[in-house]
Image (cartoon, rainbow over all chains, first blue to last red; front, top):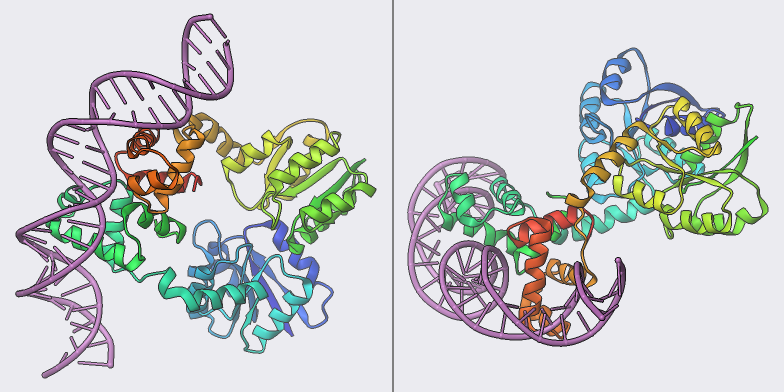
Amino acid sequence: MIRVFIVDDHPVVIEGIHSLLKNEKDIEWAGHAMNAQSCLGFFVNHTSNVILMDISMPGMDGVELCAVMKEKYPGIFILGLSTFNQGLYIKKMMENGASGYILKNSSKQELLKAIHTVHDGGIFFSGEAGEALMEYQKSSKAQLPELSPREKEILGLIAEGYTNPQIAEKIFLSPFTVDSHRKNLLAKFCVKNTAALIKTAAQLQLL
Amino acid sequence: MIRVFIVDDHPVVIEGIHSLLKNEKDIEWAGHAMNAQSCLGFFVNHTSNVILMDISMPGMDGVELCAVMKEKYPGIFILGLSTFNQGLYIKKMMENGASGYILKNSSKQELLKAIHTVHDGGIFFSGEAGEALMEYQKSSKAQLPELSPREKEILGLIAEGYTNPQIAEKIFLSPFTVDSHRKNLLAKFCVKNTAALIKTAAQLQLL
DNA sequence: TCAATAATCACCTGAAAGGGGGATTTTAAA
DNA sequence: TTTAAAATCCCCCTTTCAGGTGATTATTGA
């Protein structure tokens, strides 16, 4: 018997999935939580093998909650749930122990298949999400340059409108050093000037 | 009798709202569409007074669909529906004839109240959405500077990484002119350099 | 222990951006 | 028709940025 628990802050979504699953013979409704806190508190008394978890929730989001839950209850399988098709989040979710990812605009058939697959220890991706992940992994180096902490810090300050001398004063560095970091940022993002740098960073949600 | 029709690309949402409304005495389920096209095609044969409409859908989005539907069927009331709490979209939706806006993480009570309110010709906003709208309208002038077509064009080219001389060559202008527009952009956005300009524009979804 | 990376600092050069100051001409609205 | 806004153009000067080249010092992982 598959016991499904859901964590989502949208009543409509909880109701919808409940409605889709309630007539399934091999699936039992284990309950729901509307946020990460109540999930952590409430879940102790329940047993569930599969958790459907919204990636974006107020307070602690699904990505973090996923890690905590997997640590406390290694036996459960977590299926990410979202309206978005965001390669970045899917990857983070997987790194934190999720067994798969499904979009809320998936069909009932796809939802059932996903639940069964992860319950059997498999990995499932929504068609589009799967493609997004592939796309992401293929081009991750080009799209998401790995930034050092210092580079992230300086990128943020550049976006705020600070000039090299101002940044240097602010974080107690030589203007030369700040300039080096800035040039490395341009190189890592494969862009020629600040405008393109900030636009790209904004698009990749790094700001 | 209130006849509710829903346009949303998420089966879970359709199912959830259907489930929440099916036991309501004065509400009748008029059907659903999964995208703007099928809504436009399918809706002719149906009568409905209230349409719940997702603002973000593949293809034509709710904002556009709202305008089209209101033109074809002026008698219906449209209630925007979204996971987000985005003042900008709410405003656009309202400008296109919507009677209100509700978040998908609203309670059943709030959903019912919203449906009844718009059916009676009123205007309804989800608590948070309402605040967002107020916040938006209060600060809209400061946050959303009015840009001339030329300025928008040049802003876009700056974001692409083109320099003044390159832009000048591209759109057959003097570099001086491009520079003037650039300086006007900085002034209108109340920022001191390109980095802050692009960040602000990206945050306001102008890119 | 060795290699790789991050982080730091430095200089030179030319190009671009930013802060001022003006000016004329279209175009659209009042 | 007058006015306002947009769009166009020009020049001054200073600062900042970007490209190139080079270096030393942690820190960390293999």
